[in-house]
Image (cartoon, rainbow, N blue to C red; front, side, top):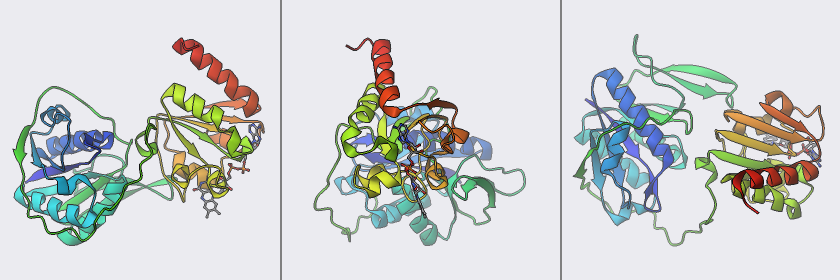
Length: 321
Ligand SMILES: Cc1cc2nc3c(=O)[nH]c(=O)nc-3n(C[C@H](O)[C@H](O)[C@H](O)COP(=O)(O)OP(=O)(O)OC[C@H]3O[C@@H](n4cnc5c(N)ncnc54)[C@H](O)[C@@H]3O)c2cc1C
């Protein structure tokens, strides 16, 4: 019996969401009185043994270039093989894009109950009950998982990373690799930007910014803060910004430490994707804008006056000319 954590990586680096999954899995293993082990697919340049600081004792590493690109079918088969080899009764995976593609397949393949979007450790005092967000974060449901093997896909940014001391034993894992059914012929990447799903700080713009030509100040503020940029659906639909930046019920769901909303009304569908943010700052010229009800800090004012002033102040703080 063990807890197996899937360690997701991209471009040769372990993703931040994996640190959360490792911490979660290690704490769960402690709770269950068992060991926590990780499985990492593909080649990474990071120090794999150092991931032991999150509490895993052993990492099974399949250092095979075939796994450098996510192939959900292949990943499912290989993670199931790792689960069998480690006698895993719980598999922990981040509910990021990879997790959303892999976890349901793994659940079907292993006949294992799946909780996608788990936000806390299970209550194991009477069964195995896991809390997850439902109705776009408006409520929580406690899901009782009764299958022998359980899969928990945890919501990114819902569980704090805890790093201690220690290193993990890294063991070679050589799963049987079938010829992939999917062949990646090209990858188009946005470089030099903080990926939205991993970002701790996000600066977002809405229709109040009037047009794509005014995004310079949003990008400048985001750049100074080291933040990712996002937008409302209205903005993406108008092709002012790319669709991958659109957050909300029909876009990405994010939970950064800081979400700055500029000229966004705060429609319920937008809030559904951002209401798990730790701190929300709203800039809107309409004091009645619904977003203010969800805000921790609000500035009633014209974005074209407020944002340049914010940029100046951040520059002063950072000592940038
Ligand atoms: C099924 C469904 C799903 C949807 N999914 C999503 C989703 O995932 N994400 C999403 O965002 N929306 C979604 N929507 C759309 C949503 O209902 C809103 O229409 C949309 O969020 C509005 O975008 P907005 O706030 O940028 O624009 P608007 O509603 O036009 O608001 C613009 C805001 O800017 C303010 N403003 C104007 N000028 C300035 C200025 N100079 N300075 C400061 N503030 C200013 C205004 O006061 C206003 O509050 C969905 C709708 C439906 C029906």
